[in-house]
Structure formats: structure tokens, C-alpha cells
Length: 403
Image (cartoon, rainbow, N blue to C red; front, side, top):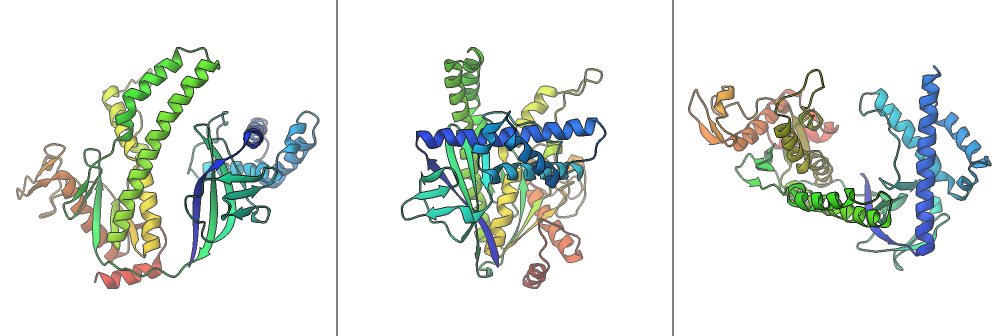
């Protein structure tokens, strides 16, 4: 089977290469914003959507224009890739998968991609990488790159440059070494509670660093904008954000790796995180209630990284031969696993579950995990499960395994 995998490293550019990286990222940002402005102006005038091919002709004109001669100094393939990214963003918007594309700001997610593997050379023995118009650039070689190189993405974060090398390679079809199934209930007091009664305590990386972050943000607010002192204060704020993100990512990778290695079949709640974390502020005409409490809840929900947890668990289970099923999450914490009586009164507190009908008692999150697993088995037997990916062949194998 084919496996696409990305290997990310920190770049070690010299001063000239650092200036070129900033210039190329700025050129890609300029082309993206100019193309987006053109799309908006075209829509306002009643014109049809400009596709990628037509937009690429505008890019050629911009590169040859006397107003933007510096675009010619940038590699053309990353600029073309930017137009494809914008076109994909609009397609996602038209399909109601994403919001309307927005303009990019300087210093926020600066990146560009080299899509043509023929122009890229990788010298792992000498810890260097050749990129068009950048030449050989060194990187911190922390692990070997496996597979055939497909594309390279260069990005900036917290004044550091990183390279993500995507490869493709043929691997043997994974063979299941475990045969256990488990249900997972995601929460805030407990990050993940399993149907066997065990659980993972939350990390709360943002909550831990929140006071420190607020202190540096106050210092930044008191500086003259764009001054040298303001830039230094901004760098400290960015450093704290990077620490929060790195801690959360490390926590999620360790948790998902452990789960994917120990279980063949994992049932998880199909949570709508965006809907769950919507603001309760309301409008001026219809103001919301308990806005401060809901704001704190939203921060706690987003601090857990449930979406990234599900994404990592999906592909890691696939690599190990397992399957991830997403099941509807409604009433999983209010349904009794013994008599299946559903009532809001069953969950007396955040942690305590006592069935009002049969008096079954347990931790509420454990009850939710048990119900997730049982519901997943029922939906799997009926063929109505909400699959995280299409796996008809593996579905048949797993059905035989657990029958």
C-alpha cells in the first residue's frame, strides 16, 4: 500500500538565505492577497468566478509588470501553488466546508511550497537540501527521510524556519497484532476516558501558560506599535504560543500512539467542536447569557485539541491496521448502560452518574465511553456507522474478527 508521510525539520539558513526566505514568503502572500482582491472585485461587478487557469494568466502579467518586477525574482512554482491554494479555499467555501477566504497578514503563517520534486535535491549524509533560487540550505537532521520525495513546504514560526518534506513509499499491508476494541469519551475534567475504566488526564497547556501569556501581552500592548521594543515583546508572546502548541502536540502524539498500538478497533464520539465552542455573546439586540462562563468553557474545549486527536488517531490506526469509527455523541452521558434508560437526571453532577430507573452508579465519563463502544458495535453490525474513512475491505475483516 502507498503511504504519504511528511518529515519536518528546522532549517539553518545563513543571513542571505534568511532574507530570501522572507522575500519569497512575502511574494507568495502578495500574490495570494492580490488574487483574492481580484476575485472579490470581480464578484462585486457581477462577473463569474475566475478559475485557476485564468488566474495563472494574471500571475504572468503581474510578473512581467513594471509595477511588480520583484515577483520575477521569486520562484514561479510556489507562486502558482498559492493560486491553487486560493482556488481550493473557494471550492471548500462553495461546498460549505469552510468560511470565505481571508487576506493574509505579514508574519502570520508565512510559508510557500515547492511542488515539483524534480527541482529539489536532498543530501541526507551532509544534512542539506537544495531548493530553487535558494541553493543548498542546511537543516537539523533528526531522523532519516523515508520514501520518494514528492514536495517541500517551507514555513516560518517564531522567527525560525522549518521545512516539511512529503514523501511517498510502498509499505506492506499492516497486520493486526492486537484484537481489542475500545470506546473513548472525550471531556475536559478527563481528556479521554476509556470503556475499560482507565482514562488520560488533561494537559491544559494553554491554562498553564495563560498567566504568563497575559503578562507578555500586556507588555506588548504598552509599547509603540512596530517599534523595536514592540517587536521584542511580540517575539516573547510568540514564544509562549509556540510552547503551548508544542506541549499540546507532544501530548496528543504520545496519547494517540499508545492507543493505536494497543487497540484494533476504536470508537470515538463524532463531536462538532466548532458548534460546541461558539460564542454566547449574542448581538446588541439579543445579548447572550452567562457569556463569561461560556467563554471559559470554550477556551477549555479548544485547549484540549479534540480535532487533532481524532486526526492523529485516524492515520495512526490505519498505519497499524486498525480502524477508527466515529459514532453520534448525543445522550451518551445520559443513557444507562444497564437498562438503557435515557434521562438528564441520570447525570447528577459532572462526574456522578446514577440511573433514576435501575440505580446503576458509575463515573459519568466512564458511562459515556461504555455507551460509545456499545453504540459503535450496534452501528457497525447494522452498517450505518459514520466512518472516518472508507474501508470496506477492512470493515469485513474487523467484522469477522469481533464476530
